[in-house]
Length: 186
Image 1 (cartoon, helix red, strand yellow):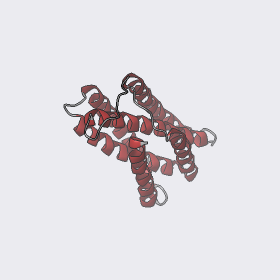
Image 2 (cartoon, helix red, strand yellow):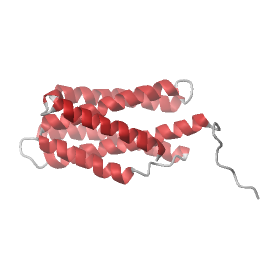
Image 3 (tube, helix red, strand yellow):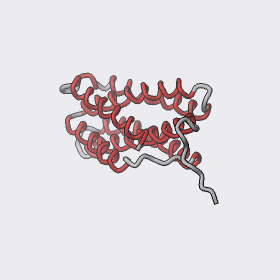
Image 4 (cartoon, helix red, strand yellow):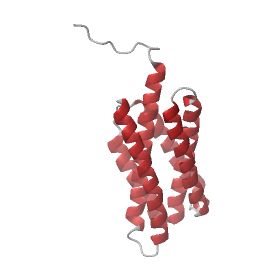
């Protein structure tokens, strides 16, 4: 009885890369939901923050739809989810709660930073998927447009006027980029 061997270097490179994309995108949407949950946990409890809470709830609902799509793709295509999900859950919720505690503008700065990294990430994936996987490219392109809308909402709500905006934005972007690299592989 012969057992299938693990892929040799160069075998099914495209298939492995598509699975990495699905894994990392699933992790990213999961993390985004957690960020918004953390922000809502704060804003839902503070008088006078109902407008911010409503906007965040709307963006969270969009991320939930994205997550459902990637849940489906993970199941249909037999992709192993990231092992980092418990870490991303705590980190995302914590980031959301901390930025909300810093104020509405900081929460929106968080959204802007995260969505900017995701917009770039989805853009690179879209280019890579051209002629490779039409279904996944369609999903990535559609979600990229929705992430851009979230980023624009955050900017309109004063993201760039947050306390220590350049530092806050840079730190969040660095963390997002690191999470992307880690989630592709682990």
